[in-house]
Image (tube, rainbow, N blue to C red):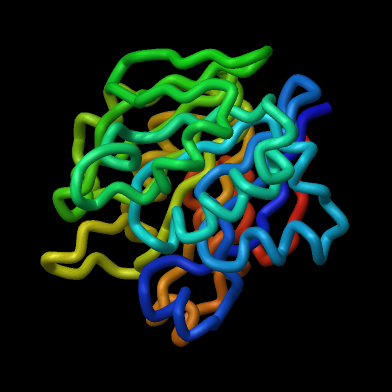
Length: 251
């Protein structure tokens, strides 16, 4: 059985860097392979705290380059490859993570990787038994950002401004849909998803299970995510969970 483990559930600058909750993205155990998605600040430490050896990682994935999604990516490459002694780890990310003035991957560490590939909308990247499709390029503060589909089972809706096109492009009836729900209410000029947006997406995609995560500071200050998840369940008829730091979900 596959599973997802949430190393951290903070989203946005204030929630992440005030350490209201942990960051660090999430681990996927998929087709007997281990994938670390969006290793934000603390990911390396949190893996060791849960007694997970980074050398067991097969693939690292970045949805985009913002620090709350990528801060520990270099530490993970170095630890997963045992300082270059092991040559088995791949990295999938937007081209902007590898190239240009805002690149986040240290050039010398790219030589540690067994394989690297760039996301483009509609393209499926493959490594071992893992397939990752860049379903849609999101609007997110002028940063190259993608919604990702893992092995046709898990849809990761990373940070974005809501667009009606999502309702058309996202695959339907996936097993799990993870939505970065940083805002409770929409805020002008902030290109993050809100609870209202999550409800629209869940109603249209109709996953077997939905999980909201990546909560912003104002969301956590004023609302209880688990109560919000219950409310979303009542509105959509789809079981919706609120992720918490360390939560494991099997699917």
